[in-house]
Length: 259
Image 1 (cartoon, rainbow, N blue to C red):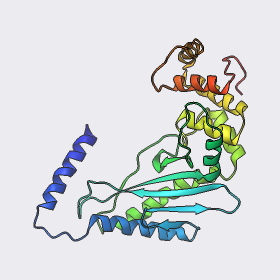
Image 2 (image 1 turned 30 degrees about the horizontal axis):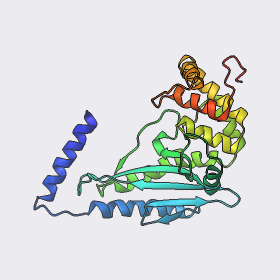
Image 3 (image 1 turned 120 degrees about the vertical axis):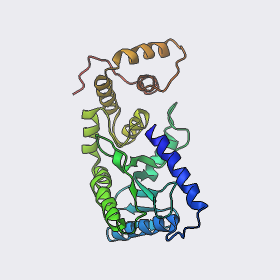
Image 4 (image 1 turned 180 degrees about the horizontal axis):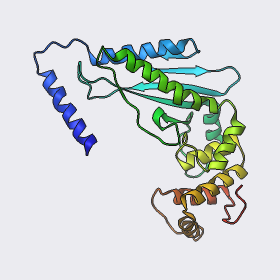
């Protein structure tokens, strides 16, 4: 409700600004683009290449298949001199992963192969996710806000990218936790594990996931329906895992050792 009211208030103030005779000192779009460029300039020294047209920067390191991408976005409800929003996303991409998808199509996985491996809004790239957004409209605080954006990229995005510099420890962590904040969808996570690891690690991860969510009962009920050729509906976790069990011939016996 607060979000809906906030959007409504911004729309109202935006309309008032548009029909006001008050001089607008700065164009929101220009402010946004300027801040994005300033952030990109900082990361240029670390090898990131900036695309001004797409407001994103990418890094490809020698010897790695992964491309690290940081993207900026704003809002349709920006108001000159009052609100210029910036949010930041960090994603890991791989051409090899996309090629693997096209050659290893599995039932209900994405029909269109994608370079996307993992990532998201940078506030979500941690165990306790949060939504991060900055307002750079005020020229008096813009430098401080810009510095804070850089600090949070360094705090969340760069460590996330570093996880993919050494895959075996990342796979071990995923298996032990039964999930990964960087790939929240259980089907996408399974797909990545099948690509980068083994079926055994997929089984261990999904078993840990079922136990941590306490959804064995729901999973087993749906699995039985699928084996009896009954139709199921809904996008619940247990539905997805049951489908994966059938399609990949997984052994998720509940009492099997998951350590």
